[in-house]
Amino acid sequence: MIQKKMVFQKGNGQKIAAMAYLAGTEQNYPTVIFAHGFNSNYRDLQHHGDGFAQAGINCIFFDFCGGGLNTLSDGTMKQMTVLTEAEDLTEMINQVSQMECVDETRLFVQGESQGGFVAAYVAAQIPERIKGLILWYPAFVIPEDSKRRFERKDNTCFGIELCADYNKIAKDIDIFKVISDYTGPVKLIHGEKDSCVPICYSEKAQKVYKDVSFTVIKGAGHGFDGEDSKFAREQSIVFIKEHL
Image (cartoon, rainbow, N blue to C red; front, side, top):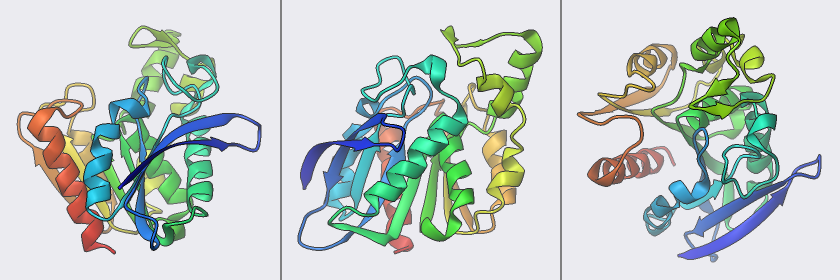
């Protein structure tokens, strides 16, 4: 297993900070790109990297530009929307696909919370390039929440000032219509007691996706800790191996 800090550059000059956990260098391995949630960063997720790499799967974590107050990538949260994050993830897919030791025909995308929303959105735009999609408590509630904030002229979320266009853009995305364009295999994992993104949103997504398995973690809330976190990772690894 090789741990490696990386920096990717977008066409507009912005830099995306990343951390790679590589299964090895002697061949091309299946690879998963893991997208973090709102106001998070890859350091909150990278403890999963060893598990994927030891299972023979490259795992690439990255910070969205402006994706959190402590992002290592360029940009600020006042510049971020779900579509700027979609651009970042698409750029990551483009560049990671070209890396040595990455099998671009076995490229998976994984996302948690807002990162799950973005991962699902992007996979629907380029379905032929994504071997499988893993979503932990995906925030498909975002359009509805954004519409309520827009109508109240509330430009904050969890006390953080948003981009002026964040709500305006997100409120008009029919996410369940969008994600129907992804026909590859999907793994949904959601906590039974999630009060931030109620489980009903994943239940609705389950009905939209054509090839989906759904795991509910009893008693878990939004964000997995301890044994719940380990279990979610193990389930994700099993899913990837089943679809190689």
